Image (spheres, rainbow, N blue to C red):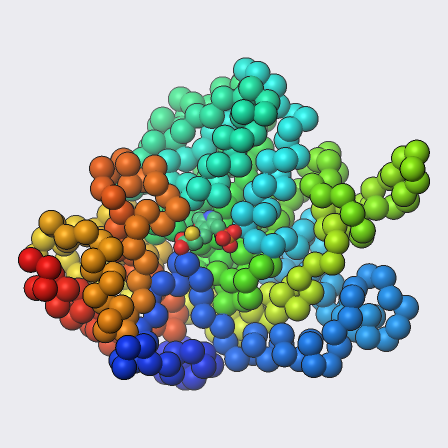
Length: 405
Ligand SMILES: Cc1ncc(COP(=O)(O)O)c(CN[C@@H](CS)C(=O)O)c1O
C-alpha cells in the first residue's frame, strides 16, 4: 500500500480529538507515540476473551495467554533480528531495562574501572550508571558534544582505554534528534573489550535496527514509543552476557527450585522476568510491531524526513528562532527557542491553540547546561503528522512570539 498519511490517520482515534476547541495537533511523539486502533483492540481482546496468568496454569485460558505472550516475544526477536528468543527480556520499559543491567554489573566493576556515557544521554541512561559507580568505585567518563549537538568521536577515542569496561550511548537523542553512529561506537568499544548498551527508546519508532548486524551487547527500548502501550518494553542482551549477570528481582517465575537452604534460578529469559508481567502490554507490543511493519520503516523514515525538512525550513523563517541539534544525521525532532522568550511560555500558548509540544529539559539537563539554556520547546513528529500540522505549529509559534515580545 502506498504511504497515505490521511488513511493512516484514520487508524488513530485520538487524532480526531479537539483540544481547547481546536483540532489536536500532537507533536510530542518523542514523549510517547499515539496508539492505532489495532493496538487498542488487542488489549481489549485480551481482557475480554483470554485474560489469564501465564506460564503457570494448566487450563486453556492460561495456555492461550501464554501462547500470545510468547508469540509477542518471537515477534520482537524477528523484528530486531535477534538470534534467540531467550535473548529478549520483556521489561516495563527502557528505564527498567537499563537499571536491570546496571544492577547486574555490581559484581563486575571495581575501583579503577571506567564507564563511558555520552553528553546526549537521557537521565535514564546517566543516573543508573552514576549509582553503579557509587556502588563499585568505577569512574564515569563523558563523550562531549559539539555546537551542532553531535558527539565528538575523536574525544571518545581518547576516553577509551584498557580500563573501559562499559559504554552507554543512546541511538537517537530525545532532546535534539541527533542520530548517533552507534556501529562505529560499538566497534571501537569492542576493540578494548568493553561492552556496549544502546538506549534505543527514541530510535525504534523511526528506524528498524538490526541488532545482530550491530553486534551490540545490550539494547533497550519502550513499547510506548513504538505506538505500543506504556509499561512494557524490551531489553536485548547477548545470551553470554545475560547468563553471566545475576537476576534483577527475586520472586515467582524466575526460579528453578526454591528451598530454604538454597534457591536455583530459571534460565533465560525468565531469570529476568520475576512476577506477573504486563501480559496485555507485552501482547500489544507485538501488535504495535505488526502495525509499524505494515506501514514499512522505509516509508516511515522517508516521510518523517520530509516533515523534518519542511518544519526546519518553516521554523527558521521566524526571526529570533534558534534550533538546537543541527547535525546532518537527525530524526524528526526539533528543539528550538525564541530569543528573549522562555520555552515554557511558548508551550503554554500553543497548547491553547490545540498544539501539543514539550518544553523544558526533556530529562536531558546536561544538554541544556552545555547550551547554557533553561530548556527548549521540542516538537517531535511521527509518520501520522502532516505538513498542515506543521503550518499550524508555525502559525501558533508566531502568535506566541507576538504576544510575548
Ligand atoms: C532516549 C530516552 N531514553 C530513555 C527514556 C525513558 O523511557 P521510559 O519509557 O520512560 O522508561 C526516554 C523517554 N523520553 C521521554 C520521556 S522523558 C521524552 O519526553 O523524551 C528517552 O527518550
